[in-house]
Image 1 (tube, helix red, strand yellow):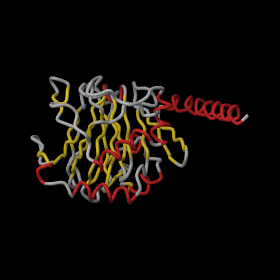
Image 2 (tube, one colour):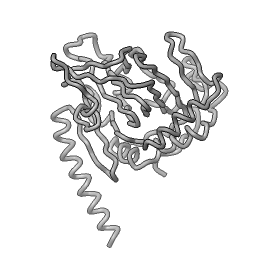
Image 3 (cartoon, rainbow, N blue to C red):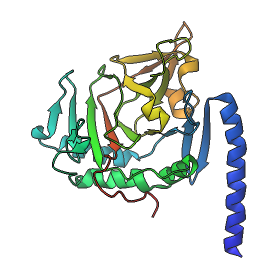
Length: 280
């Protein structure tokens, strides 16, 4: 009896989701789902599947954020790598990826405990399970992590992560907000394909996959305050995002970066290991 009741309830929830998804597809914007107290906002980029991008606010708690920041700070100076094209620093965990060989030099290395725990969380929490369920396919378990340090005003040029990884990435933001910009690779016409933005609040998780990964560049401007058009900020209705925005006289929205930002970028290297399913 309980099993059939569960199936009926699950079918009802799925039907409601598909009804909302119809409106979401028609609007080409965002849809928010709240499941098990976890709010997931699906974000639609043009020419992608409507659920290729998901934003999860407050993915980790304040205590978890503090734990991660302390663990990052406790790493020896030798663990930091200086970027060749900027003054930005990164930590590479899981092994060094060779873009030409499309493999990890020396094989995949185990993640340290503080990252392994978070990688498992990215792969197995209810939020990720719901997101992957609606995507219609299972993401691969992350086995590679970049810890990126962005001092106030630092960004990263528009880029793609490339074919060395499974076509999906999860970005956990810590300590300071920022705005990530998605730029279509389909053409140079900024009128038809204008850049689109997602605000990344501290402790939030951004997941993007599929054509959002392969057909778009993503980057963060080198600014201390991001200024974007209101209709180009795809998660501007999120309550936490709205609280951090200031409206300028010209009608644009401004988001100030308040501190050094750290981001944890979780990916899965292609062919590096037999990845376990997110949902066992």
